[in-house]
Length: 221
Image 1 (cartoon, rainbow, N blue to C red):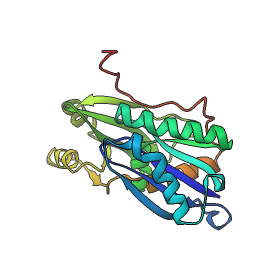
Image 2: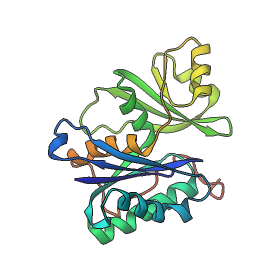
Image 3: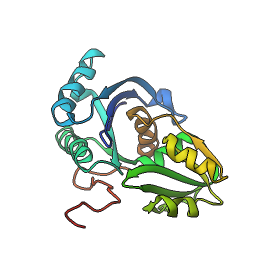
């Protein structure tokens, strides 16, 4: 199966093309290529870059077997653009979608076990937080919420923190707690976790695909 993964959640994004299926029975995928996207131009870049990535490797949109997309948390505008493209493409091609939380990607990428707290910088002195027990109970939905920096450092005690943000990692380390600093998240990691979700049947239709903002918009506040 050819899997297309998209992450437009932050200042910079990426798309990844991956091969999964019979040769990936262990749950892994072969990432064919990851292409970066410059921040601020997702709406203009995304569709042409997807077409270019497919064409470079001898594919077209009809070869795509499934989609994996970062559903949040992150930039309101960026997430909307990525989700809109996936919704439209999956609707036309009638393919499944794996909606992937970036906090869950942090945990999945870290490979850590036990009480794991994933953390992402939310700006404005706030932190996106996801609390996970690995291995977890089937059907359990880990809580994801937003905390102030001080609340995060207080609640992180007793947890292993995983984050790609070096500033957050240093703050946790300075507070005397355990932290694993991850490489920046890309669409390749979204593809790997997305394939795991697809294998387990954890997919959504275009109508069901929604952004996981966690934070309310300024208008709502």
